[in-house]
Amino acid sequence: MSIITDTLKSIVNGNGKGLVTFITGGDPDLRTTSSLIVSLARNGADIIEVGVPFSDPTADGPVIQR
Image (cartoon, rainbow, N blue to C red):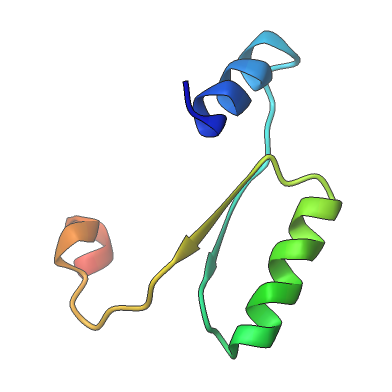
């Protein structure tokens, strides 16, 4: 099992509510990204996804592409 799978199972077996967050890495800079990750973790984020900025969102699907 992965830590993500374990976290999701814990959420499902608990109250069924979790906080999954997303931030864009490096926006506005790496120091801020690092601070945001620490702050999110300290304030209850169950999962923190860090996205890599990319100019061509073809992998994101039609809604994001528009």
